[in-house]
Image 1 (tube, one colour):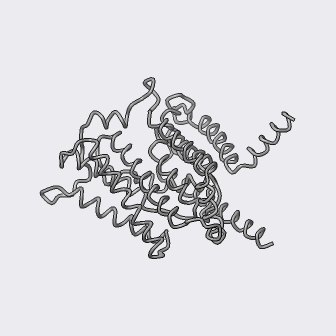
Image 2 (cartoon, one colour):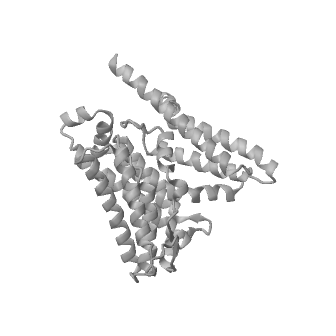
Image 3 (cartoon, one colour):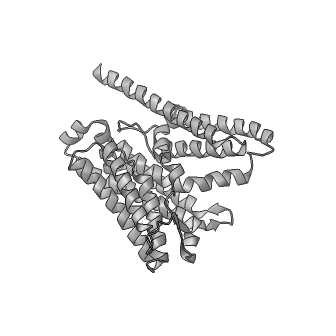
Length: 337
């Protein structure tokens, strides 16, 4: 009986959407390890993997927020811009306005949540398409950020530096002198949200809203209330990413998170969260994020140009979207049959 249970568990693991990604991750590691010496480098070092983990912490929160929202069938294209705005607000509040660090943090998070509320209103009350509504809010948020970053002389500052020991510690504290504490916070967040989706009534409601909105309505699920929560949560996760990045570099920047603008969405899609909603989970999103950051780090180590890296990253996203499209198509055919 015990052997049967082990075999059954193994089969479930193989059939999971994250399993092909894990295989891809292993293949990538082997390839980068083989190619790195051609650039007089070494991929298989503790420093490399710690660097990859460090790179996960900021976009990790983006992936959590984007993933939960996508499970419900929603999408938010303003999330990374909200993160950049949050970092700018943090820097300006401390450096220009003289707020204490905790006041600056609260203000930054409140304003990021407000963007989420506006997104939810546009989608749920004005019936705008999430793609269009959040893309428009991304533009509005960037304009607000640029206004906030304009000093008393009327000059817009691309970066605003600040020096606060507590915030610097939040962004850079390392456990044992090598493991960033923000990594553990991010992993804990993935676990908590994973349990929220898979083990709670609210999580089951989110899946049903994304997979079958009509059934969710007939079941008495308050889809609008859930949508508000998810859009606010998505913006807050973006804001948290911006805060961690800002604390790490001790500045607010108009270009913050620009390299991770679509990382959260890409990680979620790679991890099996469908654009149509109703499937996937946090485990897959985390593995998707790990694949993306391992790929980026490996391409840097082997000396590949940023152009080649961007092209291949785009191809990876396109492949994931194509796979998602055909998966949804097969699912619709089964339902129709």
